[in-house]
Length: 344
Image 1: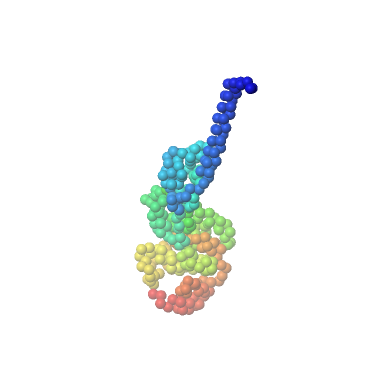
Image 2: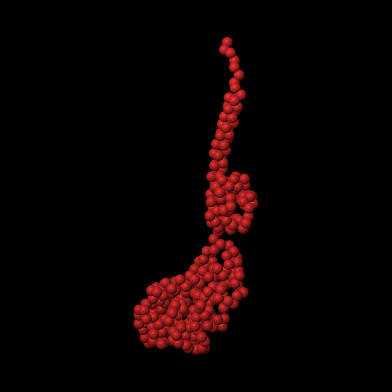
């Protein structure tokens, strides 16, 4: 029989070490595969859209536990480990979030580090007065209200406006913002948006317009905005007003009178109203009123700076949303009789 020899201690130790390393390698590989699947498999959200908030200076552990409790994550520890492995553990952005589809923990981590917070909106409509604009701004629940008690003069100072009043200087549009953005920030954005549009259109304006500056163009645009909602008529109405300004004729436009009457206007413009003098009565006073009467949209601004080239001096509403344009007073009077017989 062959002689038995003992295996050297060093060999046994090497074999044991190799076995342990093999076990570690197998376990690590299996764990890596399992962990990869865990963090890359989308988690079914409890509801879609799913909304949640991350508070400023919240710890990674608290955030992970919050998301786990809300059934947005399968567990907290894997998210914490993933955040440390990717180096994003200190990069999660605070804010209000809205998920519209199922995300894996890895996708969610990237989503939170990119700060893709929920966007709220507020819409200001063309033709609104500042009081209408202010009411919608003050009533929005997602806005941090800091300027509601400010005077108009203080408001002009804070937004850096040089105009004499707040009427018409904010651009009507839909603005996106994150929760708790200040109303002052939105006011500044709307003001500077109007300034950009005015500057652009002023550069490309018709030459020899009877307008001294952009602000007078804004005033004219606001009147056009209130006179018609028809895009194809804006330039023609602008052409009539520009012609009247050139001929030193009174503008004789109802919307300015109505604006100047304020709360006294009962919904029906009377002859006596047209005869009662005030700063905005363009039947009794020549030229443009002292300020805009509403927020004009871009189409009205463009019409004011590039009116139709025409000999028309009058127009009257036909009752169907369109207007009849006339070159002479006689033609205009016939049109008034035809289309507004029952006007008081």
